Image 1 (tube, rainbow, N blue to C red):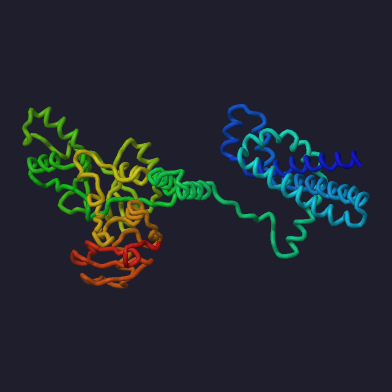
Image 2 (image 1 turned 90 degrees about the vertical axis):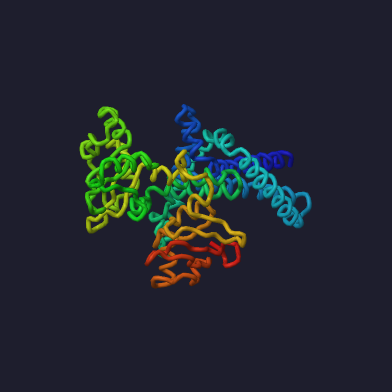
Length: 426
């Protein structure tokens, strides 16, 4: 009887080991284990090897755990029947259920969740041996499971894996909701992940907001305009704004003025400007960023499908998708109104119609969709199904949009009421 009791305790200890190992190996951070493996930790490499074949790992652990649990229950029933007779079966059921739940399930899994990486590193060598020993059985079991799944029309080989981008995005959003990642860090990380889904048209400065100069103006006026501008690179066109003939850099103008002794009349803008770089509006932002780095330039003119200038894109525009709006000493003070967002006393916001939905979502922590339209004006026109009139209101995506101002056929200013009363519904 004493030997049987000791055997039951040993079997429960083995169950403790199996349950804790299962939780630790599945809950440990893959990124942390990869980092440890690269630093030379052999047990971390072993953990990576085990978790790369989860079916075999889980199969071996479950097989071992069930064997020891069933054997422990059988021994307990045999022992208590000897002591209490037929009533021992009931006592064994109650006692082993309590022992297995507390000491073989809850306790080891809780300990493993507290420090999953350390637990996983400790058990990895033993689990590796168990996986090898049980390999023939687990492979046979897995084959049987696959046959059963196919009978129900399920193909285990077509298991959908979450992409790395989506896994990182979900992790960042989860940590932000739990307060472990601040909003700014979340926005920056999301901005990096979003680059792969954006085209140049999504980040460019539209032609209606472009600052450009006519090369046919008197050279003195051109120089004054260049020096008064807040921009260092300015497109130059020849009579027609669509006919961009070059990009002039303020530093090149200053150098040319210095060489001419400060005589602006001796300056030839055509000799100072550089050739423009034209790119299609459909170019992915990631590719455009690589292009900027390879060409060592910071600006490109964006063409639509007809070949007309649709806007311009700069390296700063792409960087702002990651870090948010960048201000310098020539910009307005750093507040919401400087970006076209003006909070109102009634919890609404007055915004410029050309502001992008992504910038609005980032500034106000909203989640307006931007898959079909990219600006606030686009949302209003999509909801109205026509060119709206001032003071008209429209409901879209749980928000109320009131048109405040029109510039000809362009929606210039819009007042947005989140949820119609001041609480965004998303």
